[in-house]
Length: 283
Image (cartoon, rainbow, N blue to C red; front, side, top):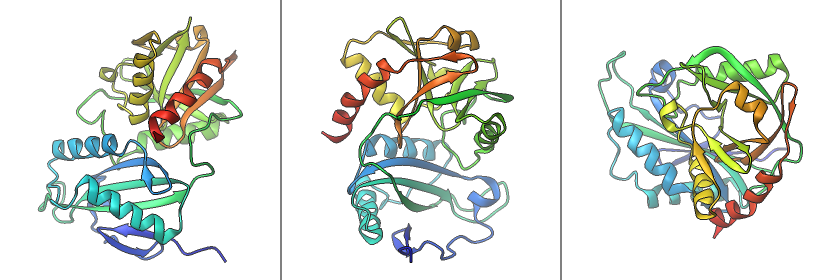
């Protein structure tokens, strides 16, 4: 029999299958919510300050009223409580969702918010480069607008859902997303980097891509290691000219790409980033 799992709902540890959200929950009705997905090792969440600061910043932009108890130290303790209850002592995926309280239709009646923490096990407790390279393609049916919401992780994720469905149809591992100008800006759940002539290239955040937490760490590693770095547009032709392509997110770290259509890539550069990434994450 599988072990019963728990969630943390506003500081209460509840059974995972227990109903905790009402039918008039604003995250369900309007996508009126933000979330962060994080990597944990034991009871520690990697780059938690960066995740927390991004969440609080965007909550302020949306007019959420954050409770005074919603502090870094308090949340870290709540995550640790949940880990211990679920008996997660090694690698784990953590999702923290914050949503505006119920009330009103499009116009909310209450800007206070509620939070939910969910966890699931990971196979490893450190970042490891994928053994088999990813195959990717484009998702061009829907473009991501460059607007107020571009840099937020909201519960309205239909664009990324459709990109995931595109991957299934195309029989690839991930799909690249275009902005309203037709530039490649990210993948369905990751930022994108390409390597050309030993120079690291990633789209600028003004392109509409999510300013990913792992993206920040790779840029930090490049700057500290004197690795040539450019933030510029990535086009379809850029993918055919690239020596390497890899994707980054907070849970998986770095995932190297082996193929885009007929183009094949190496992963030598991506390999060199794993050790400094783990040093940055776990030191």
